Image: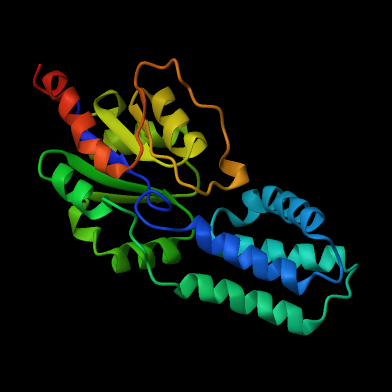
Length: 235
């Protein structure tokens, strides 16, 4: 019995990782005289891992990690001009227009007619609220949850609060680690819609043998999948 469908936001409904990659390329160019690209990428990823517990997910934490890495690789000699450019790059990311992914609007609109649809995203509160407002999808969601992290416990709580429990819910997203695996552990369906770009910290092995796990090529394939579950919903 499926009653509730949760959607991830970044790289599920709209583009996100592409802007991080472009900014990281800019970061690499600014520090080209101090570290080769591969080493710099490793140092930045290590800084992001260290800082997740302090800054959380999102642009602000990424910007601070770039600045920290710049200070480290230059042994404290990074020019103030470079720090200023990194701050400007982070600000530009926070102001970038939303680009909806294919089928996002049509799919959420279609499913909102028959199911409770919830937006479940993680990251900076102000940035996520801005992106949702610009997306034009806000009125379609019966609830919006912006969380610090996505865990089995958070999915259980969200689907109990806004639905009829995790066992009657589905979570749809591009991240196996955040959107699918913890939702399956909570008892929900987990639907993976891969994106061409995936952050290294979101990498995970697919739970291929789980009976509630599905992989779709894009969001346009979601309504037919849900329709196939409709007998369970009525039964």
